[in-house]
Image 1 (cartoon, rainbow, N blue to C red):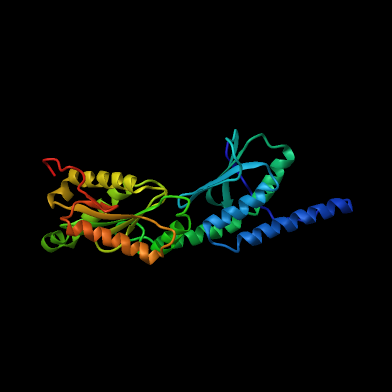
Image 2 (tube, one colour):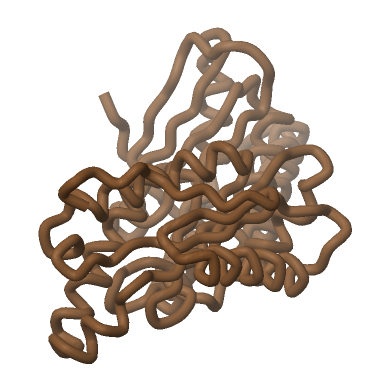
Length: 309
């Protein structure tokens, strides 16, 4: 059963209290106020939930937190092991549903721990509302209006993130260019060309993993940012996308194929150098005849073309 958290203003208690109890409540309020203030110092999603999770973990034996909304899904794991219990809360602010927060635990919470969780949670709500509003505006500004993929405004920051973790993890960038697309615009007009771009963008979005990012980099160029992905795994993704184009009636009618180049992100390079490398590999695939993927010095034509392709 999902619980609605109702936010109420603190009111002064009319009943007399012991001084020690009063001071304890004041300290709790100051700590909570400090959390709310710290949450409002950042609009970075990762940093926001790390601040909240760290504060919460010091006060409640919590395993993880997961927030889900139409525009944002984010999970922070705070403890090792497999959680046995969870508590899902619908998060409201001013009668507006922001999303759902799910807390997981290794053991049931006591009554006092539940009350503490509810109190801490209440100070999350309005900073979270501001974060989601900013995130929504940022997402709209970073989207290509035709394909609904990301646009190139996010490219540099995403690549820098991969470079920073490239010593510990394997990351791949893939640049894709469409073969024979220009003739569609020239012979059929931009309406048909736009329809094909939308179909290809949908295919690309279907074939990449949830934690990957597809970007419309230029007119008929796409950039795939593939964290935690090897070049061989990226090539498998390329083969699936190429096969989907071959099987698509409208796209195959104009003999449109993919030419792609990929590179493994290296920790000692700049974002501009990584982009230059992946662009060079893509053009190597084009100059080798197109409809192929160039990576690790190899140019693989994939998939083997069926009779209908």
